[in-house]
Image (cartoon, rainbow, N blue to C red; front, side):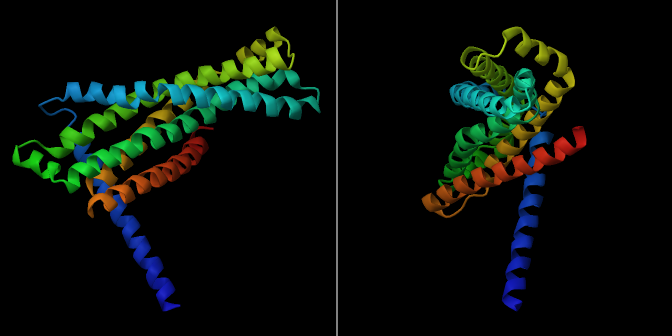
Length: 256
């Protein structure tokens, strides 16, 4: 029993320590936003890496999410003769919930893990120390551009995912299942509000911050050589995914 409580206490202390380190890293990165030199080139490079290079996987997942959602809701609503609500259900689900969450999880697996691996490799090969020797702040150089790029590009990717998901729902609902096209679109216009889109984009900004912060944090504090880099990469994906789902519930409870 003592060993059990000891293990729980040690795990709690490690969790609190990680939260404190991430908070300090976030504060330091935010402090460099308005201080020279501005790393504009690095910022645009990270925007390309996080956003443009993630476009295909976001489009693919958004499309099939909308398609399967339309298929499932059609068969459920048909029992109540409510097939006309399929379009509105797909649109509301994508904009409020599935669009930002699925996009964030996909980008976490693709970009967040790469950030942890890249910065972790720089740490174990002493490239981070070399930056300090050259009077370059590693947080400003490595972390701040990635955080800003994640917060900018996740909402844009979410917009793409929402649009493609609704288009996929339209393709399945109207072209394959025979729902009236005007009825499908009119229900979307009637029930979907701008606040639903804004709330989803707000979630995307928070998710972008979480996945980039966790990826940078895990890479920044990597140790143990090549094995440590692999461990940090895995931990970054798992921790960021869990935090995204937890924050999604909190944001949903506050917004709706």
